[in-house]
Length: 349
Image (cartoon, rainbow, N blue to C red; front, side, top):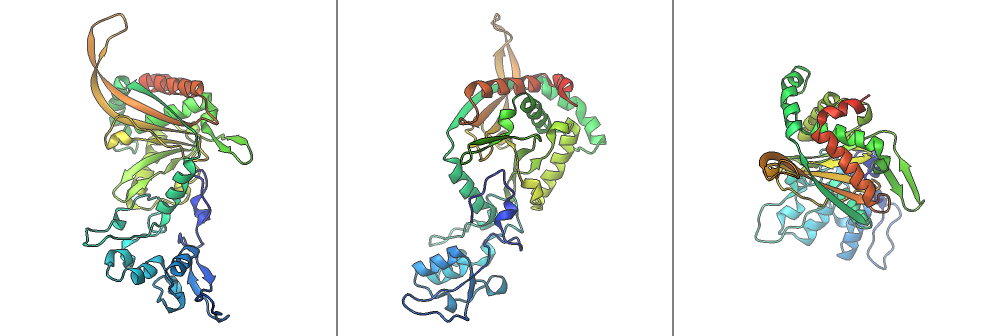
């Protein structure tokens, strides 16, 4: 399995059937013996290696996969015969069933008297590869706080109209996404992808913004494509479509492929600050914290306090492509759009 980049289409890392363990016809035989040339075992390289490490002849294993393919669970069942959770095929899920999940809850074993060994499959496996690759990135962090009082008023004012236009519940996220797109127009470096081997930086014309979504099935990162040409309402409608598909586990490969920039609303769960991790080949990511009602001085020359809605914003960037000054200026522009949402009208097409 090749190490995927987040900007790539994950479907290319699977076989045509949509299974994350591409089927290989391989021969395995005990050390020192000659395997019959006509007998082949359907399995993956990882399973073949596991069998070899544990001196298991794959020709004697009854495969439970499609076409009799020997799965890792079949090997683990032999290694841990008393561990039901480790060997049960029902404890795993394939990418075809949940293409966008990074942490499917169905794979978590119930408490047992013995340790459970489960296979890391599908999107989880790709996330491990991507996160390992991200460790090679020299990360730079930047944070600021946003006063969302004005945005809250605009959102609440537009909610009744949005309901008549196909948006049952207008949230902050469409505004955040559009503000990011407008800021990316001014600072296109943050909408680029880096190729270290070729020493190139690709500036993307389209603003394809990934939005991390927490669902009962796990984490999903659908992509709102072409944000630069969309209104806040159109983004809201598209987010609603993607959220519904994510909740049902029906996101397509195109729905999750090739983001050029990513936003994560961790505040929907809790927490104010985060250190978001850039997913290569992207060069930037943002994470919103929860909105809190906090006291702030009315202005720099006054001792008078007022209650305002504050949201902390955390940015992460690849310091090889993005310098601190560019990150700060981008954040300031994004902040100005969020604090003065009417100003976004001047930048829309």
